[in-house]
Length: 460
Image 1 (cartoon, rainbow, N blue to C red):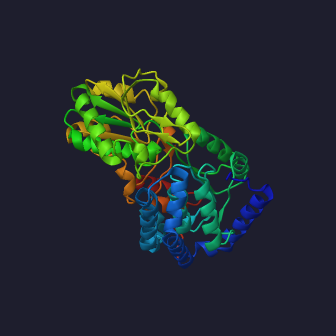
Image 2 (cartoon, rainbow, N blue to C red; image 1 turned 135 degrees about the vertical axis):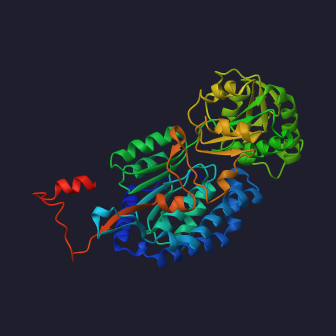
Image 3 (tube, rainbow, N blue to C red; image 1 turned 45 degrees about the vertical axis):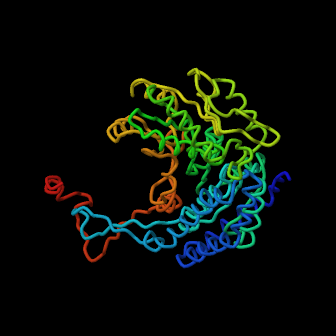
């Protein structure tokens, strides 16, 4: 079933109703925010199977993968916000210079207002609802725009959100490019976008018309360096897992491997072993191996497969949206697979002799969303000091996203802005600085004709 475009009059009505609701002040009350976070958690608990079923239909995710990589991440986020919201919402005293005596100073978090959250198709539940937790927690309203490619999840989210929240507070708007375009022509107080860098640029340009702040969670070519000091079997297992969850359709998946030439062969063999252990000899028959989002994604992988030597895998079936986990070697630096973010289960493996060689390859690309290093701590420190990335893991992949106490976000072409945990609360809030001055005394130093300026200048 294709997603239908939302009527523009309906969008206008929802946008206007949310502006009025925010102005009423109801969404800013702490008691209300906490109650709505609990409503959100309750509806997810009640509909876990329905959510997992939708994800199965869209991406062939197993229940286990759906729970671990989507549902549970949202649970953790909600629980942290419920626990910490009262503390985060307090005024925070800050120091006041002596010459401002007897004034005092503090910051107070205020909700930004009416927000738009645009989610991608690869994690269509988590990346739609996780930012929503921050919007609710901070006291904002939200319009949620799911991806039209993940049809089942988009329809389910529309149904569940509509049943549990008033549309003048939280609403789902479905549709494709025309609906996205119309939404981006509206005035919001924050736009939160997760998706490709190309579309992120369009979002930023649209937001600039109203000077609307944006959070852009994008992607890029996240490198994975495997040094000769690495524990090869562990490295291979963690890389194979990070690359093949969601069939590689993960913004922080290892995009390519840079392995020291002395351990290339052993790494490839260990990767093969891990892939077979995960999905069996035929990944197509595995209950735990997802599918590509659509036929075009498979055809795109087919182009990449022609650009190197297939060391493992290589089977595709566009009708079944299937791409086998594939290891690719003997790739030329100017190959398309090394120029674009892969976003699939194709893993190019390049070798290097010195750290300098590896850095030269990494620096040919824009700043990535993630950086992974396997090896000893000394080399890790050296590389982390020279590679700028949104996030990083040492001797692991992906797991930095699992810690809701760590901020998540990109840098440069891989994005701007951060969220998760307290960072989500901050992202949807404005921390207003306030100076409170009593009236029982009014020192004359700041007023013309600056009678005591000479004395004051010496003290300053």
